[in-house]
Image (cartoon, rainbow, N blue to C red):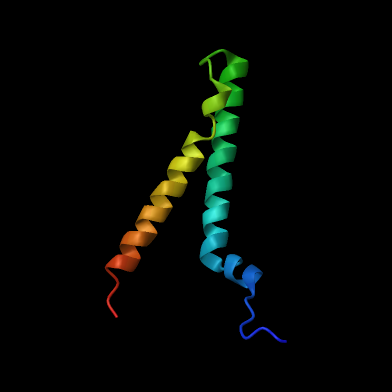
Length: 76
């Protein structure tokens, strides 16, 4: 028996908007790691490496909230 609906899951993930979000998160993660590494080497700040992912998570939350608000107040 054939399934009625065929879901193409990778096509739902690889949209332009999702690629922009992933690139933004990777850029934020790279910047925070490089800032922590440079400040640790120069002795300017002592960085706790456990909290290095917080800026990327904050950017993700801002993007999700902004997208939700944009979709909520979109005029049809």
